[in-house]
Length: 99
Image 1 (cartoon, rainbow, N blue to C red):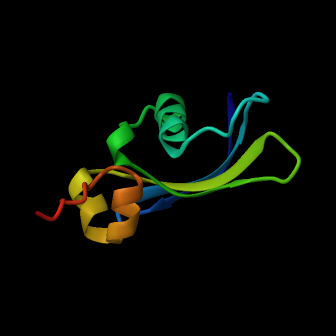
Image 2: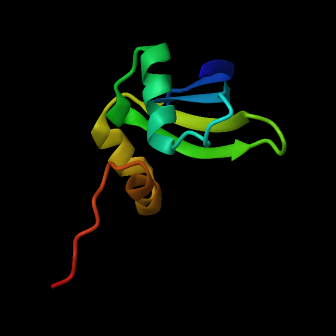
């Protein structure tokens, strides 16, 4: 897999870095959100648990994903600023089972 950073913005107010990127992958299945988080963490020297993937969109007919992510400075900032559904999607918050 190949990660290419298209744009990086520093959002000082929300204490995060916002990145737009493309990921090229082999002809296997589309990489999961978790795999893309690991790839971003490895390439940008960030902690995986501080990365929130907002969206990944596969381009039709190509083995390319366009995406947008946010890298927070602390986990508390992510918990404060992100909606619950994003935290559940990115495995930062776990749903409690009803008994």
